[in-house]
Length: 190
Image 1: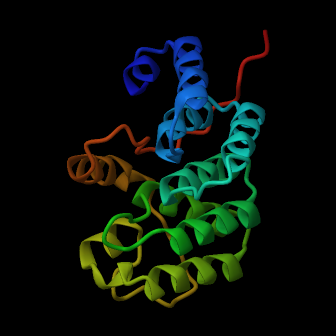
Image 2: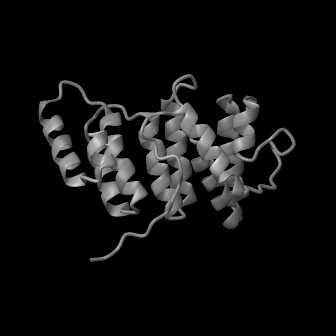
């Protein structure tokens, strides 16, 4: 399915997903993450939210990656509360050894908090990162703009010129099909 998504054959990927749903012996939300990520990347909020609801109805547990992708949808729609709620779910589901939030997405949420002057949400996110131990990793903390001098301070200055450096480092660590950059695209109306 990931190959079909990468090739842009979304109809083929959707058909394959539906076929997989009909014959699966157990549900793995990471299969659906490919399509959810595509909808998020293309700015199709309605399709992404609809697809997520379908995934959630499966009755199976959703992975951290699924919640993180959904947070990206909300970040692009400037809904801090919803994005933070999704990341909270991701933190609760994920074990720090197997998942860590994409620094580009975390930085994008911090930037949105700064733009909307929502420092309470920014502090909540810092608390989640601290509680999960991610801020102990100096490299990760610096990638999201929270080096030791800024952790715990309300003054968030996420520099957009770091995005290329973050993407390069994060892509080296993660060889899967994770969307490593929050790019908010408005869908075209046809």
